[in-house]
Image (cartoon, rainbow, N blue to C red; front, top):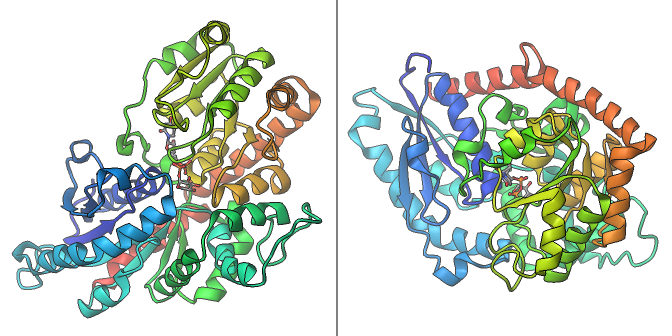
Length: 455
Ligand code: UDX
């Protein structure tokens, strides 16, 4: 860490793995630049304080019952969290601002700003009343952040693209009508009000932070700057500066790495659907058969509770398991960044969460895209239609389709061309975080901005 600069930042992540990782990475970056860091977090999915001895962690009650924490309806959970965390957050923040070590009187640790996830929508009046500058971090791709504010309008217009499903959606590029149909299908109208609040909370902030870069999001960055009229910092794939594993809520199975060590270069397909996606028993079996029939070695993450109605993988019959273990390994959670870095990995069958997509790009691993929810549909379109560094399963969770796509990626000329394009994209994005690259400059500007917020 650089010498302390006497300034403190307060971070407030949403309690989801895909949101905790970028926030903790940002915390590590700011700490390395001399800021002291306080993380206010919910009891649910609390980050492991012991992994970050240099940060101060303050837990607030979130009021979620055991049943609610097990809910698979993420948007319902976010709505409940916003309702129930407002008052405890206010108390915690007010106390923090009044505490002697952060008070302006002693000038020991002036609080520079609050940085919260864009999903917290009650922060604006509170920070304003406390005269505390506020920055917003969003964990998705910039183009999704900008485009998803069009969803209420698309719903109002009764957007039911049952025909011409492959057509582009002008209001939300590069999604196709069938993608938007799935998005609208998934969301309830209650959510439109939530989206509007996210928009207003972001617009009234002192700046927006994204884990993206010009090389991945150029057009949307320009447009978002125009729309929001606040400083925007696309600080790049931050895991390249500090690995994310220390913010993992689950314990990674480290036996993955010695298992990969025994495999040939670029021979293994890695399969993981992140921290939220759930699948049915029959989908589990289709994926299992598709992997086995492809004859390619595989490393597959099946989280406990990921398969609806079962505990883990007991729905796979014993004789199928025997055949699967000839070629593959199934784990409950992997050290994903180390896995994607490994020379044995040749492809990634992914749900296209933004963190996973960027991690794959940074390691030059071509993808097979199987998006399930929310921003994953857009990320998959970028991977397959814009950057052309992956193949899209188009929601066909069928053994033959999975087998066929894996074979194309690993064995055919089309797969080779995808791999070459991915290598170029990896280099471009890699340059952006190096000295004077676009993300590097944005990060410098962000540090400067935070520094000046407090003056
Ligand atoms: C969620 C949403 O699903 C996603 O669409 C949104 O972009 C961010 O929030 P999640 O589903 O968890 O995120 O996916 P993703 O964004 O890919 O983040 C998963 C993180 O967990 C990655 O950093 C990945 O490296 C890590 N991970 C995943 C592991 O460390 N081990 C695993 O076995 C699986």
